[in-house]
Structures are given as structure tokens and as C-alpha cells.
Amino acid sequence: MSVESGPRHHPSSKLQDAQAFPDVATLRSMLHDLNQPLSTAVLALQAVPFQGLEEGRESSRFGLLCVEHGIDLMRQMQRYLNRENEPCVVHHVTDLIQRWIPFFGFYLEGIRFKIKVQAVRASIQIDPVDLKRILLNLLTNGKEAIYEKGESHPTLYFIVEEVQVINEPQPAASDPAPGTYVAFEVQDNGRGVRSDCVRRLGSGYTTKGNARGVGLRGVLARLSDYGGYLQVNNETRGGAIFRVLLPTMGTP
Image (cartoon, rainbow, N blue to C red):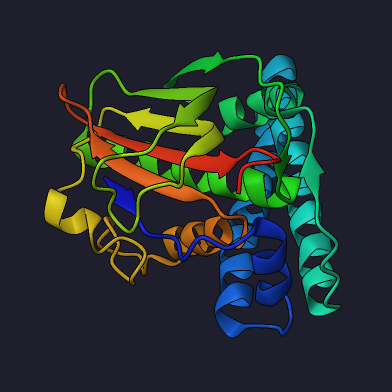
């Protein structure tokens, strides 16, 4: 099932429209995502004096990766406030994801993180900081879903591949337009998402009782800016599957 992320406009025109004026909801989403790496960095670095040499080195490395991500987010916020809307293109998707894997792995400590990243030759139009924010949000949701269930063998699957979407006989309004996409899929073995809840995702509904759904709303807003889609399904063996589709350059 797809969650609608807006009408099918060309990604560059949508991006320019979205960044024409500072938006409170967008800034709130940015601050939400900024809090995550900075607070995690503080916790990681505070633990270093009480750890052994190797463990301390690992905590320091993770803390610095979080700080680096936080700096990227602050620079993005500055560009947004300055209304700098130059289109960004990611040419080497596979290389970029491989560079982020250690950061994701640190962040998911305690969870088996299984990765399958295929060679992606196509380019996609998206700010790399936005792509990292989207993926980290989905990985975080999966991590929290697993912990809420109390799963004894917590596992997250992360898959990146190039896919082809074909014409459906009776497409729904939220279905992706035919074309070539890069798919980023996160699978968890938590409780899954009820079908009636899928339709409410992104409208303020959250799967977490103590949150406000800001993170997921931000994911949908950013995907809409780039002509992307979010598909949500449940794994037959339990758990949820969140799949992001971003059109490759040349896909209308």
C-alpha cells in the first residue's frame, strides 16, 4: 500500500515551490531531526571516560559521526532559510549509501543489521542530507518498533535497489507513476502496522504513543518535494516494511 505524497509534478519544480518561503512545519521537522544526532552524540561522548580503550574509541567515532550529521543538518537549515534552492543530484547512490552504513550500524547497536545494497547506476535528484534524514527516520522507527514488541532476536533489513514500475490496469491515486526508481527498503520484525493505521500515517498519526508523528510527516513532505513515494506493508512473518521510491533522472 502506498501513502500519497502529493501530485505528480516534476521534482525540480516541486522543490522550488517547497523552498519559496520558510515554512514552520518544515523548520519543525528539521529541528526534530537535528535533536536526534546531537543528543545521541552527547550521550556517546559522555560515556567515553568510563569505557575501556577500544570501547571508548568506538564511542568517540560514533559521537563524531553524529556531530558531522548534525552539522550537515544545520547547514541545510541555513540554506533553506536563505532560500537557496539549487537542485541537488546524487550520481553515485551505491557509494553514498556504503559511506553511511557505519553510521547507521552504530546507531542501531544491539540490533542485527542486515544489508543488501545493489549496484545502482542511475542518478536521483535529492539533497543527500534529505536522503540521509529520510533513511535515518525509517531506521529509527523500525528500531523503536522492535523494542516496543520486546523481540528476542531484533533484526532490521536494509535493501537498496533499482526497480521498474509498470502501468497498473486500475492505478490508485497514490500509486507511483510508471518509470525507473531507486528503492530504499527498511524491514523490521516488530508488531507491524495495522491496515487502518497505514491510511493515517503522515497526517499527525504516529505508531508511537509518546510522539507526535513529526518524523514521518517530515519524511512524506520531503519525498513529495522530490517526486518520491512511501509504500507501507506488513511482512507475512511479522513486522513492517517501509519502502521509499525516488525517481531516477529522466523519469517524468
